[in-house]
Image 1 (cartoon, one colour):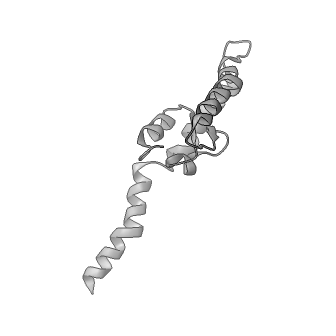
Image 2 (image 1 turned 180 degrees about the horizontal axis):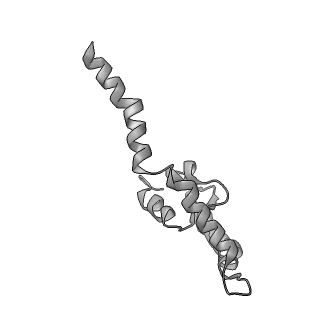
Image 3 (image 1 turned 135 degrees about the vertical axis):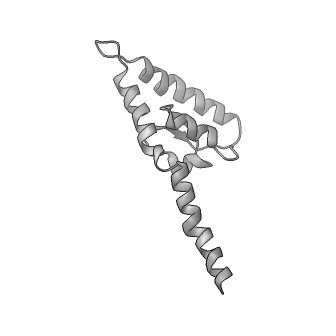
Length: 112
């Protein structure tokens, strides 16, 4: 259970697929094609779920290569990670959101 998720966001921006429970930033960031998500229960079943994803989905996908030795499907997940999180978790988006949601309201209050 992550406090802010900035490490996951930065990793995703660099093409690292994410595997996590749906909390924090991953609730907004996960789209079904840019990594893996599972319902965390906060008990031993979480470890089992992680190992199942790793053994049954992630490792096979990573090692499945084409005739040139390229893991094409893995690369698709990497590209989707960058594409889907780049604009959503950028500093530009954050500043724009703060201006629209908070700073404009604060300026209007000062003008009154």
